[in-house]
Image 1 (cartoon, rainbow, N blue to C red):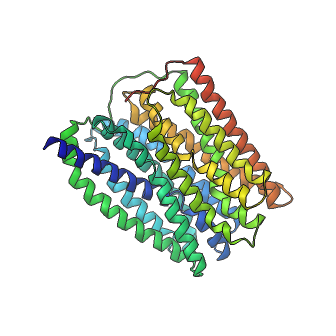
Image 2 (cartoon, rainbow, N blue to C red):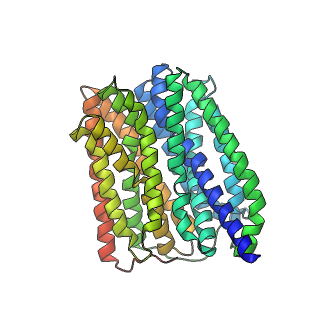
Image 3 (tube, helix red, strand yellow):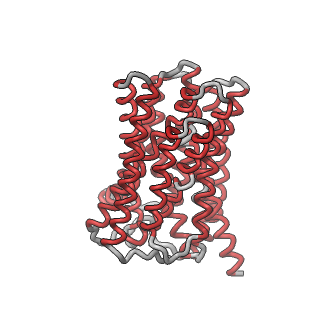
Length: 411
């Protein structure tokens, strides 16, 4: 009976983790990328306004990460009861659904707020989903399934790309597209809400889980700071391509119908990369793996400019997507090793650094676009800087591996 209960708990945790990432990351964060060309086509925004909306989203992501770090302290100061992460996760996904719906409203003046709020909630979704699922799966002895959980963002990206492509074929407006994503997010959130509420008690009874936040002392060192910087460079390195890829491809090869399949291919790469983590031996240093993943992404960012045709774009976007969530998974595993007591808080600080990189990416691109002779030149400079930042982050991980050699990951 206990084994059956454990299997049901594992299934509940995995399902909630996957769907939470689909809504909280795949839709909230990345549906904007395939919908940006639709919004430009509808003349609801221009390219600079699109970059500004992206930066506001990632500013919200940054502040959401900071908020999750401060929340335990704020609750203790107010002498409030600290909620379970599962409860925070449910209500946060509901808020994300409402903010996505807000982008379908005919009030462009409110769109900056909705993108900012979506970013804020998306950071909370990533942190709470990561911390809750990794903790549950580790104590249930099924941590290898975390690779399946981290395929959720990729599944969301595939769905967002395919839905946007279908809507483009049928000449739907961007307003209809945002409404469609809001309805789908509401449906998935309903599944999460019911399933998590039913499985929560069973899961915690099996695990004897600790509170969502652990107010124990734990000192952080230079290793924590340098690793946070390396992770922040990953956020900066990928975001320019992840935000503007369809626009870059449409401007480079405007008549090619295959451009609409680039974003789903990115999602496929994300899923395959996350699932490949199941085959990684547990005794390999995560920083060495991160070094390889950073190099792969650096190549993927710049490859379309070396081979300025459809195969260059296809291979480049796949190399960008394959290590994308693999980097996040490995980084969160490393966070559990570096900070076994205050894991959630350290995950929040890593997410904040990642968000800083995401904020700087679109803003820097907007600057280069205004200072360049044409969009192609501005994108080339932006992607060159992004590729270089990924190289720097990769070598920083390699430095940490040799300077702090005790980096074997344990469950």
